[in-house]
Length: 84
Image (cartoon, rainbow, N blue to C red; front, side, top):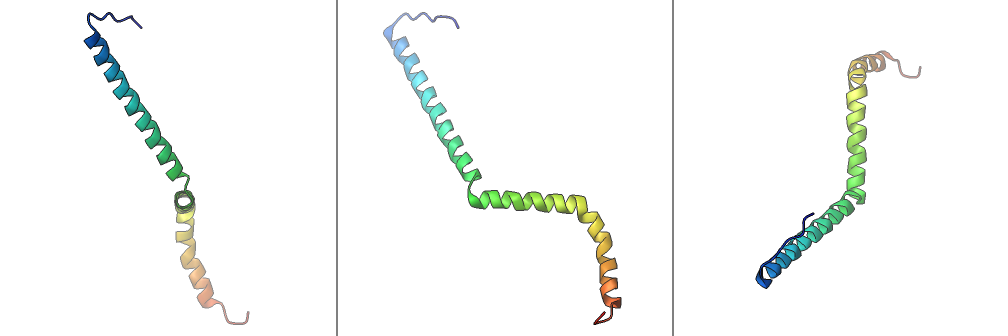
């Protein structure tokens, strides 16, 4: 990083004001990031993520198998006599 040379105090004040605004923007980004992280760990979001993961895993991996087995199981129940 090179050392900046200033010819007046006005330039220094301007640079300090820019740095102050950049610092505030960075701080607000950090605060927003922390809020989003807290929200993502809320009970409802965690539960929704778990349900979505289970659902997508179940239907992608086992969906084809169950779509094939469901008609067979239905026929088996229809043919099964009561009491057996």
